[in-house]
Image (cartoon, rainbow, N blue to C red; front, top):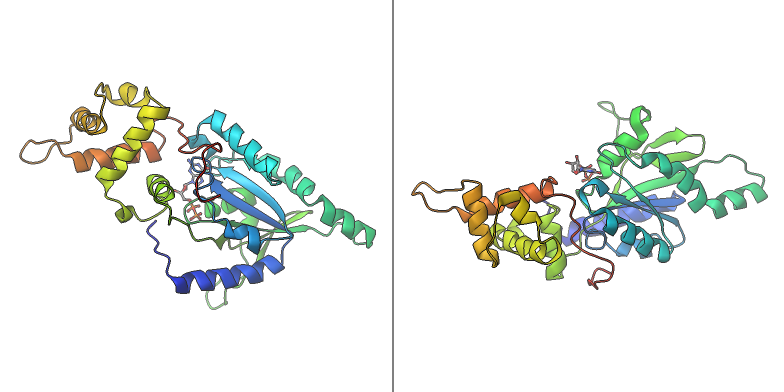
Length: 285
Ligand code: GDP
């Protein structure tokens, strides 16, 4: 998804989000489990002050399970409720209802003291582009997702999707803008395909990925492409050979090899890989 954020978009998105947040009890924030901090926009903490918070580690099927556990503990430690999900397959979604009730305990208690019984928790989904917001809403809401206002000629405003007696969801997710002033964050977001690839050239991006894999997942390239070089450029050349990336003149096409490598990473063909750990300090924190 190629999105450039200009100040105008940001201001508008922020204003709309502020209005929506007034209507809800709970913010369901999706992050990409492969880059849980880089795929966050910490502005949501100010925007959502005073609201119950649930972080979904989405695309957890593509991430390293040991790291998923570390990230869940990291966010829980900071006071967020956390559920690990795969919105595409639906894995983990069942756990959400119980956690929502737990996260909104205070509100439910407050309602009860005021004699309001069974008022559903109202929630909205937020996240930067491509983290899986629409996929999540569709699979979580399932058939309940039929939107009555979504007919020609009807102005589409926000609609509540009633999930069950105790939970309602805004049908339109809040789009947070990615923060990638930090070069490391930019590279990670580009690797997962969340920001415009043109921000970095693909060869550079592939070399960054290779260097990272060499350090953190040393057997992955060897297993997948039978490489044995020790330097990043040498490895990229071997990948080009292994994948028969040749230009018309018969020379190695490193640009094509870079694209293939990055696609293999994004689609999980290199295995379950997490690009950042809670113990590192990225500026996104
Ligand atoms: P949005 O921009 O946040 O609404 O993101 P989308 O819902 O459009 O999802 C972006 C891409 O990620 C789509 O290709 C989805 O199929 C994919 N996707 C979403 N959730 C998951 C997940 O949990 N696992 C995997 N493997 N892919 C996912």
